[in-house]
Figure 1 (cartoon, rainbow, N blue to C red):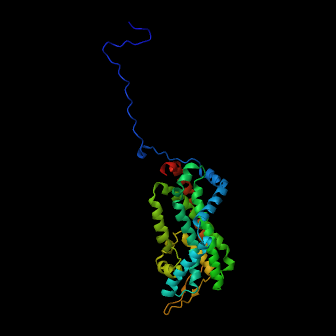
Figure 2: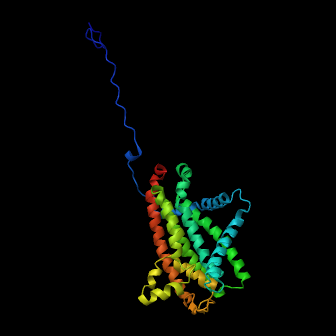
Figure 3: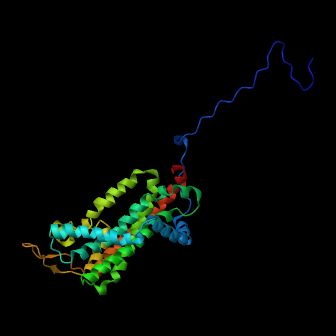
Length: 328
């Protein structure tokens, strides 16, 4: 007989244990479905960056403190380092190779001053998101600030290097073109925008392609430097060879070139013919005999391109930032 509410078991049959569930397959990195989409429009993210400007300033301060932490000379290294580099270039190109350019140290430093800002900012920003992986995964803030803080800290070092530049100009009695000092601001704005655009773009790509950081070091630290008229004269080494073929415009596809030449025109202040002291050397134009408006329009063109590139960089960063925590 069976009792109501129970189930009869045939005689001789043993009660079977419940079947075990099949183990679930472990999810590996390749099984994760990536969904990449922009979380906010670019305008809203720019507003978020502006509202977090105090955080940006604090990050710049932290970057500077960390770099010179436990250093005996501290910030003095930001003065000694460019001075040592400058001395090596002068020794090689003016003493050993005897290029004969009067006040070559001013000519060289006027280009290096701007280039160091660009190079330091872009190279530091390229790996900044990866370097701050713990912060990115735990704290909610506009991630673009990390890249922009790298440009900001490079701007602080630019200020100290500019102080070294002033010391050299006073010691050599080589005043700038006072009436063209406003062109320095005109050149700085597009350079900062262009560097910020590259910083934001490269910082986001490096999270997915770690080799990008090493590639940038090679391109920016070596090839791009020699594509700018810093160590050599544009008028003597480039224009004299390309203008006969109508290819002079190709050289200005490098966005950094107009800003470097603007700094040289204002700080070196030697347009027109310069007689080189090397025997047998003809007289050459070290700088083009352009008016201020020419430099203004060139820098304005770079600014327009840089603003467009910055917008593209913000779009790319927004689409890739959704998976930063997973990739890091």
